[in-house]
Length: 438
View 1: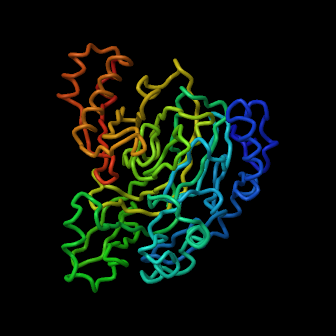
View 2: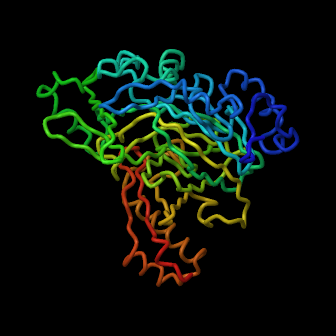
């Protein structure tokens, strides 16, 4: 047991078998036990502060950057590495998935997120060669990215490398899983922003308009897709992304996990691209350190997962991807029972908050492509975000409906989360400070 109350799993016997069986079923427990030996799950006893001294360092624009290779650096709670056994590629866990780790409710989980950029087929599926062509030394290429590219089948239609799932003891259908983001550490000092054929905000226009004009440039991949390599540099005490090109440009980093979710109640393959009512690829850039995401639980144990690490993203994510770069994420996972301290909306639909805002979420197609025809319109996402905002203000805050609607029009912002994941997303920003007297 760690000092934060979570367990490091070296064998399934370290958990209370009765409690775990109630949460995820005896058969799943036995499957989990068989899988843990290959799962790459280690606890904080394996990782001490001494490991920091052995982490790779390399000179990056005159700044020394400590690369977080798997198993190196400080972690909290249960630590889950990204290995071919603990990740899915292109698809999400479902009700039939075997947990790669188990945590108690309220426990802390640290997981390694691996970016799909640099391991995809149009980039050669060889991170050493791809990043080496950008001037990245071997010591700054992640060992787990290399292992996954070489030894994990890309089985789903999406691009994402997804770490998990993680079963949460006591989580039952009808509960809410509260996911608090406690820490997000850059694992490497670089990222990639991509635009691929048929995708992005302007499919059919870009990257096609660059063909024949810029094809000799190093950011063209196989098949004419574009991936722009961005360095991380420290300027004025902050980390910034720096782009190549004729015009010098940089921007502040604001890391978050683009993909945070729980398993859907289905045995069919779940595409990693469209977000759903179980979360997933929400791409909400407000989900930084200090945020909380509330997710309705659809299967016993919740089966939490995360991936698609972002170093920076503008609202809309218009080219297709954010500045994609591998992160180490630390979460607190807490089960909230009906009637507990969670927004009422969250028992049916994802809902988020930060220290400054409540964040109602709207998706154009919350039941995903397996639920029927794919709905892409922002109009539908906007209507749902406003409905969820009204439900929160009237049910949880006690406002009259007419006053709540007026407040949203006068004072709340509704922001395009992303337009590139087939299911589009809009999220609201309701200032907590406006309710200081509540």
